Amino acid sequence: MVRILVIDDNTDITDMLSFYLDSLGGYECKVLNDGREGLEAIRSEDFDVTILDLAMPVFSGVDVINSLKKDNQLGKKNIVILTASTLNEQDTEGFLRDGVKAILKKPISVDELTAVMHQFGH
Image 1 (tube, rainbow, N blue to C red):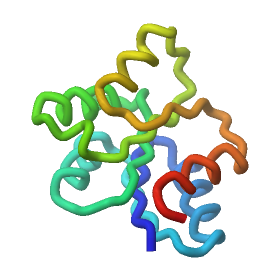
Image 2: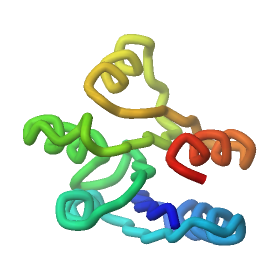
Image 3: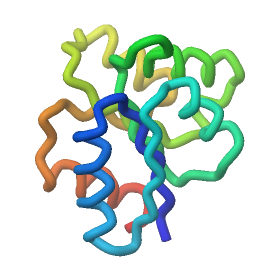
């Protein structure tokens, strides 16, 4: 069973991702709609992959990434960014160099999501 944490403040997106991955079988999804709660879950639980939105109010996905980076944990976690934000080439390269495993753009196709999830064991 591949354990996935989905962190996004948009409940429509988290509901859709969770429903889709659950329907594939072999995935167990936990959904959080708050960046700070998401960071605590990443630190305290063992997930195979975390799908992380960048643009969240109060405590963003960038804050989550920076906290993990500061603790030398970013490269040890399988973080996949899922964002509607426009990232320039420098930002993209920086995230990947720092240890983010993949960057996906919203809206995402199910084929693209499935291909990335296959990298993490299913």
